[in-house]
Image (tube, helix red, strand yellow):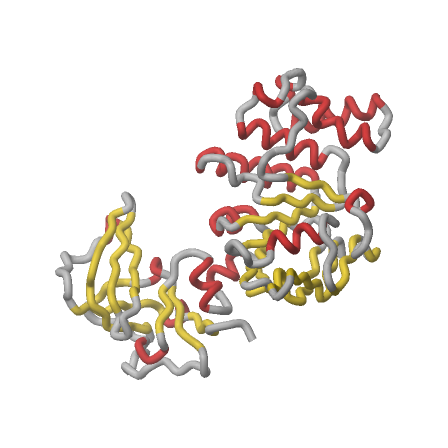
Amino acid sequence: MKLKIENLAKRYGNFDALRPTSLDVPEGEFLTLLGPSGSGKTTLLTMIAGLSLPDSGDIYIDGKRATKEPAFNRDIGMVFQNYALFPHLSIAENVAFPLRMRRIPEGEIRQRVTTMLEMISLPHVADRVPRELSGGQQQRVALARAMVYRPSIVLMDEPLGALDKNLREQMQIEIKHLHKRLGTTIIYVTHDQEEAMAMSDRICLMNGGGVEQLSEPQEIYNRPATVFAAQFIGQSNVMSANEVLDHSCSPVTVGHGTRIMVRPEHVRIVSEPRALDHHSTVTFIERINTGPTTRYFFRSNSNQIVSALVLNSDLPHELVDGQTCTLSWPSDRSVEVREINP
């Protein structure tokens, strides 16, 4: 196991920044710590990096206890949101810097720097300085510098947060390609759920200083464990069980403190539900056209907003504000979600 975290916790005064948390990360995995501000993801990352010490618990890297090891002894690379390049050094010297600090022979330094600049498609900027590069190019150089000395683990703290949408998407591809080519273990922090879905082998969804759910992207999207997970990852409809009816028009039975979640793309607006489908009676309130699709919004009997996502090639007949409608979806798309993690 490349990284093992056992009951790690951090407290500031009366605030639990990280509740006791355990986590195993195998070698070569791309793990994303995802969650809103204050969920504990950056606190966990800084303790893995050795930039802050836990109040309790342990960190193991390659089977060796690293809980109190200083950051420079942990063989960890770090990529920040603000690039943190040396403005007075050339791009080649920026990438070479961690190798020089480790007293790597000069010939090997030149070879590794050249290889990394080719990997990030920037061999032609080797003699420039950071201010002569675009934001996306600077971030690629920061990635190259973090990976050039082949660290055991690379930590990335919202590295794409300062980039525009199109550049973010390009950089996501760059990072994934680097990960595949180098096989590096990456721990990546973001609050952007689409970014996490696109890049991760697994997602560690955090909430309130603890782990809400740890799963592969498609698992956490299709089978969220809690209401928070369902609502944070993608768009969702979360309804009380007594509003969801089965094919015999009986309320769907679930456990105490459990609700029903269905994704809007699985919901259809129908006159009669099909056999074995789940369905619910709602009131139409609004539609929003997004180009290829239209989102229809409804109000349930318990005053919850429910939506259906429909391709514009499959639009239903015109709906009138206040109209009573039936929404239907395959029963296997109904997911039971808990209110909170036990």
